[in-house]
Image (cartoon, rainbow, N blue to C red):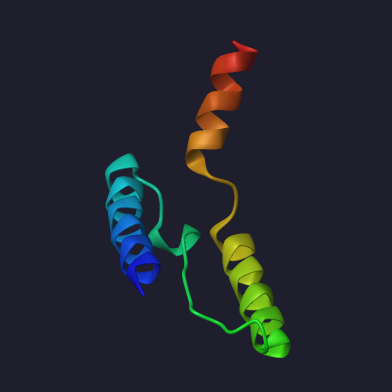
Length: 70
C-alpha cells in the first residue's frame, strides 16, 4: 500500500509543477485500474487522448521549437 501513497504524493507535486510551469492540469491524469479491467483502461486512454487533442500542443513545446529555429 505504501507505493500507492508515494505515487499519490508525487502526482500532487507534479500537478503543482505543471501549474507553476503554466501548463494545463488536464495534461496529467491518474486513475487506479486493475489489470483485469482492460476495457476500462482502454476507455480511460481514449478519453485522455481526446482531452489532450482538445488542449492542443503544449505551449512550452511551441516556445522551445521557436527558440531552436531562431
